[in-house]
Image (cartoon, rainbow over all chains, first blue to last red; front, side, top):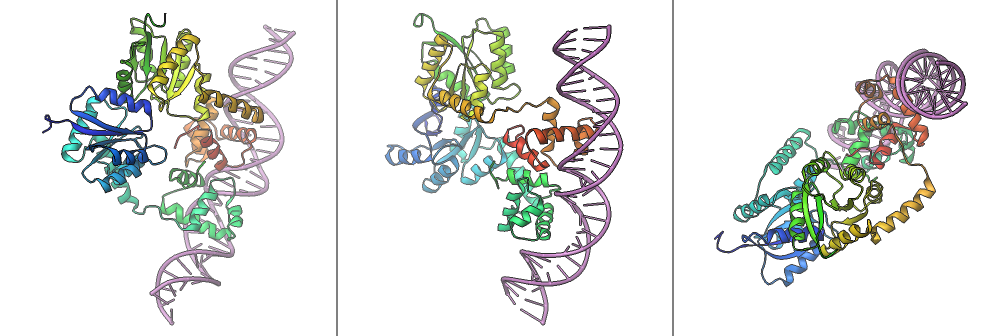
Length: 218
Length: 218
DNA sequence: AATAAAAAGGTGAAAAACAGCTTTTGTTTT
DNA sequence: AAAACAAAAGCTGTTTTTCACCTTTTTATT
């Protein structure tokens, strides 16, 4: 059946140039048939409601305006469980990959991949529901290991969060205590608690931690 | 002459899929002729040394490993002043646009543009040396206005930069001194100097400063 | 009443912040 | 080539902040 009829796919990406390029590139392969393209998740939803035929594999970008790849993937997987999503992004950070897989993507491919890799991924994902390359398996493993080690996924009380946010400034701990209407000792308790919970050793570490976990925005 | 012979161009972008897509897309237009493609600035330099013909317009990405778009553009403009560079990126922040233009790019196009816009930009830039769309002119204006206000652009020596980057860690100043093979006193000089030059009052402030000015990446 | 969690307290050592001064090195000026 | 100058590197202190460890009080939970 693989050779008989082409795989119907769709492309969701906000970069027109990339989208058009991909279409042009894939049109050379008879194995795939592009049903539609969309510029973001919301756009995609509309295409679904009007499309005559429905794709089997979606090539999904992450960063998009209005409705991003995470939300779009989750929506598709909920409403069309038979459709498989192949994430296609330039981001290669753990957070993006993990979250995309958690949202229901069956595979993750970097935009720096080659055309044949993409084609292979599309075929594999249609047949098996997932496409696992080194990139993905490595990140999954790393995620598991880091989760097993530290255990806790950052749960912070309101005060701890506020404290961390105020740490990302030139305020001294004493001044932070003032701002929060608490004793400096209490602040010191927060500090110490967070230090050991997340293996942090300095105020600088606190700032980096807050930043990396997007607790504050620059 | 525009219609007689096609414009020789080259594509420098680390994302293979994007590159190939673009080639496939542009090959439909007889107005352009793709001489070569490269995955980053260094790769591009090699192509230049081996290429039979030389392109007139370069489609240049910014974020690339080894040698990025800024450096690559500066190199091209210095060694081949007749070649025009059209920046092709997803980044639309002032900093990237301004810096790319300063490096010698004649125009700046987002990857979310349409194919015809790209074609138009290529033609314009070949003929006039620059392609100024709303995106670019707006940023240029804004940059001018903001520069009139603040004035100072952060100039940092190599050591100061390295120092600032190392500050964004849990290393103590003494450890930073070790890493840089310098006396702690010298490190203290750097610190003091930067403190007063940029009105910073604490190590935390240094971290935030480095981050906001994109001296380091998380 | 027992328990757990949050807040407040104290002490001492290490690191960071700040001030002031000298020497070396490299560049421009004359 | 000497003088002048600026930038980088080095040194000696003092004060403040940060950090670690431990105890007590208060507040909420069961």
